[in-house]
Length: 195
Image 1 (cartoon, rainbow, N blue to C red):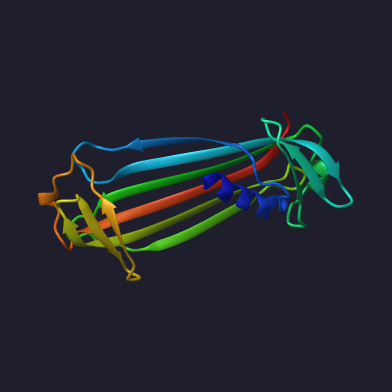
Image 2: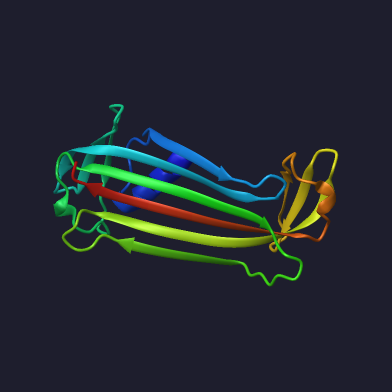
């Protein structure tokens, strides 16, 4: 799923793919404290490919993955510095999702927000881009199922989701009305580099 998402973002930067079966490498990590609800979770997916063909008149690029899969893409007009791309350049696309979940303090003032930042490659550099999207949501616990160790989280838009509670969490310390803060940061970096 993350690889497909990464490919979609790469397609935005470099055009659409005729073949989207590229192999990605994923790494995950989690930082949790025993007995404390929530924690920090991260997943990073990286795909790489080598430029093996350039049709400048069509702005078309041909790539090959480390496992030999070929794909083509058309670099749209928004891809600056197309002329800097050379045979043998390495495409590297990295998607990092970081999620922090924690219980809100009883009287804590909280807000929900979403921010987006983007940076494109400078003139005369290899094409590339980086985006950072951060959002924070606050959910209220509206039901606790102690037998199944699940809580129902209801968000400000009225949607709700039941989530499993880790076995090391004391459910008697959690009550209906408690709030949960969820912050998600997604960073996407796409670029072409000399090998």
